[in-house]
Length: 286
Image (cartoon, rainbow, N blue to C red; front, side, top):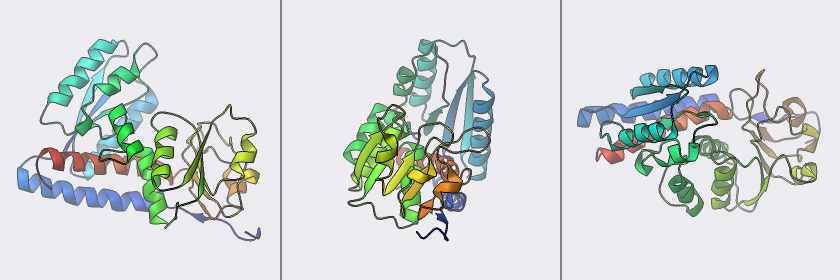
């Protein structure tokens, strides 16, 4: 870019709204045909303010989409075994079609054991090893919601990934790692980086598609963005700040997600869509 233009913003809010509308229509059809509304069970451990707010937001979105929301609140002191038992019971409950374990759950809990108690057909948040394997092998299953939302955004803006160099900065089990697998499945050449990567700036400068998911405010300098690149900022830090220095990055990128209004809304929209899809499968509505 010549410096006189700025990147086109990728409107996650608008796309998320359309995805949610489609999910609501499907949910209404399922309810009409079966007499059962899709149901998402949310398990909340403790009273972390951010988690409480996030769960409340998800429940409100569920109501608007015609999805029943069942909340299971557990004390912060709950043991791993008790949490696993709770999730196992939900997995066995035919009235529940999707399960979301709000994380973090506390340092004394084996979070992976809790995730693995979610039945694969109800893992609408895409957090189990089964779901990760499905993403990695391109098999049917539910994507981790944020990476799934990222892929839908890229499709919405007709980003051709084949042969492109995609750099993912971040390696979490539900964001960075699955994002890389999904990009690889679209024939991108994927490089994983993280906060300990040597000469990170040099690698970022080679990225045709950059996914920032490291969880550090303005960790990636806009001056390191390759001219004409697609920048997906999956970070959300205090003060509505992403992982990329937005103002300088938008002077070099071709497409860029704002924070907020980019990746964030897509996460919840994909959660709702996958809950409705899970209900359709379990209720035999295809």
